[in-house]
Length: 123
Length: 164
Image (cartoon, rainbow over all chains, first blue to last red; front, side):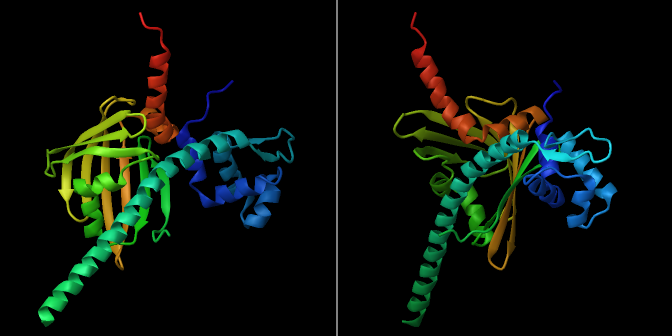
């Protein structure tokens, strides 16, 4: 068995919107380079390049038929990578929501202070 | 209600995690919430059930900070400390970061960059680790699972270990 692709390769592969779109397309079934090139309005070599990156990252596998070589989604590595990210995201999003609340509070405090000093000046 | 904007997490190079989050407040205010103890202890809390009873910040280059979190129900504690390397309010803050009971080797260098536009602030937080392995460990741990839950689990394992 080959070594698991590094997380780096996985995230680098997922960072590109075209590659994410290709994965989304493959989620509904395998497809050849030709079948992928059409809806994305891309040349076949360009699609092949993206597929190579996805394959290296372990996110897809490719069939052996010489002509079609259909690509199919490898669901597990994708699920793992997104689960890691989701956990990390959840942890920080919780903190950042707290920070949102705190900032709202500080803003209204500051607005309150401005109001009082204006009223004082008027008196 | 969530008045904030987008939140993204990406990796950069081999050793870095980069988080970007938008806040609906001027950056001067955001900078204060990153550096004043009375504010930090109100938001940097992690999962449900944790509070930050100790939050000490000596905000000067070479100065240290120390945070201690406590799980209120279980009494578990976790500490984090580091040294400030750059302080440039309201746009940049750099400090090191190390857990009291290290669960990854070495120390991380954390760089906050704050950019303001129309009263909103985009905060970028870059976390640079000693190696790719460490960075991936941190990312895989999801922080929540890796740090806070594993300490709970460790307590459990230790309590099940037969006393001699």
